[in-house]
Length: 296
Image 1 (spheres, rainbow, N blue to C red):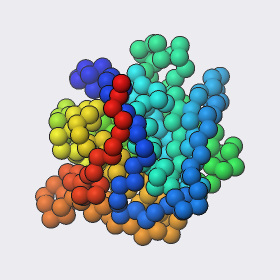
Image 2: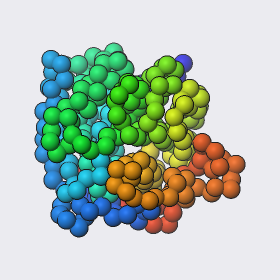
Image 3: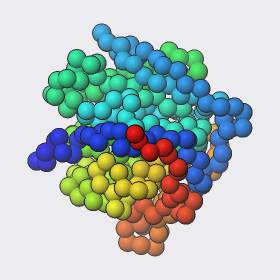
Image 4: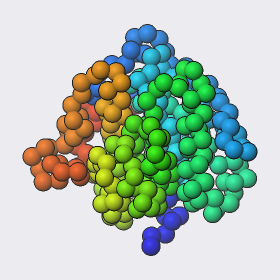
C-alpha cells in the first residue's frame, strides 16, 4: 500500500502557485455567453449539511452552462490555489463553480477525518442537494472536480443512484479509495488526469478504471508530478477539465464539440491515444502559460 500522506496531500506546497488573471487560452469550446453578457459574480455561501455548516465560494457567470463542485484533497481547503486556478478557467468558459470546505476546522485537525471517504462523500452530496434550494442553480447540470482524496469522494457521490451528476474530473486523484463497488456504479463520464511522473498513482488510476463501466478516460500529463508544479502542467489540467465539462454539459446547451481526445491534441493514430488512455499533448494555444504574479 502506498503511503497516504505522500500521495493524498493536495496542497503540501501551498503558496508556490499564485492565482492570477482568469485564463482565456484558446480551446475548441465556443465562447460562453457570459463573456459577452457581463462579468462573473462571486459570493461567500454557508452550506448546511447535517449538523454543520460549510463555508464556500460560489462564482456565477452571467449565463452558466453548468456548475462544478470542487472536492479538495487531504490537508487542503476551499482556498486551494490549484483548484482556484482551475475554477478560474472554468468560469471563463461559462461554467459556474463552488469551492467549499469538506470539513470543519476541528474535523480537519483529525487526520482520520481527512481520509474518511464516507464522511467526505456525505458532505459533497449535501452540498449538491443544497444547489436545489438555490433558484439560480437548481436547474444547472452538475459536475464534480476532485483532487487526491476528494476524487474518491466525487466518484462515491456520483455513484449514488439518482445523483444526476453529469461529469467527473479527477486531478492526481485516488479513485481506488472509492472502492470497486462504487466505481462500477458511476454512470457520469469520468476523466482521470495524472502526472506522467506520478507513477504509483498512475497504476492506482489504471486499476480503478478497470472497475468502471462508464465512459472513462485516463489522460497522463507528461512531465508532471503529483502536485502539477512543473511549468505548463497545471494549465494542461485546467484546459483538459474545461473541455471535458463543457463537452459533457453541451447536451444542455445544444453545442457541438470535438471528441475529448481531439480537443486535447492527442494523436488519435497512436496506440495510447486510440483507447481509453491517452497522453495529454497541449495545442500551441492551450499550452501558453498565463502571466501570473510571483508569490511573495
